Amino acid sequence: MIKGILVINNHGKPRLTKFYEHLPVERQQQMIRECFTLISKRSDRVCNFLEDVGAWSKDTKLVYRVYATLYFIFVVDGSESELGILDLIHVFVESLDHVFENVCELDLIFHTDKVHHILDEIVMGGMVLETNLQEILTAVGGVDHVSKGMSDEQVKEQEELETKGSKVASAKLKLKNQLR
Image 1 (cartoon, helix red, strand yellow):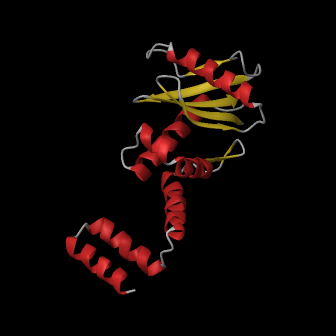
Image 2 (cartoon, rainbow, N blue to C red):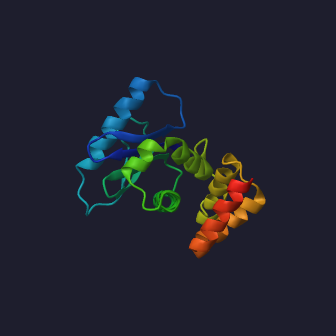
């Protein structure tokens, strides 16, 4: 089971925290600091997981990957596969990259609701729900269109516009929206 998910920048500032166990805020902050301290001083040449981390319980592992200036850390119990979690981290980062088109730290700061929605499509209550990138993007994209109040016809037109990239189609869509 996944106990927590942390995304921390290389200065130790948490950009995303999600705990699947109830913990007091002070304890969460202590765990975040300890995770960053342990991981940030590790060499790039060592493996991407740590076992029996002090602040967590005995049967806990930290599985992490570093992308640019961000540490993506999953705190898991002993029953989880380290390689499976590394793959899950990669799927999460790929999902963010597709949604935000070259995701960066600022996307995590200014679009926290969308980041949490993507994460909730992948992990819920500490259990992995989905690992298929296309399914995740479809779910996130479908909700995106609903939240914008677009009809099915408008969604199809928008998708056509995005795939073709045509200026004529863009002008046509703008004109249609103005007439409505």
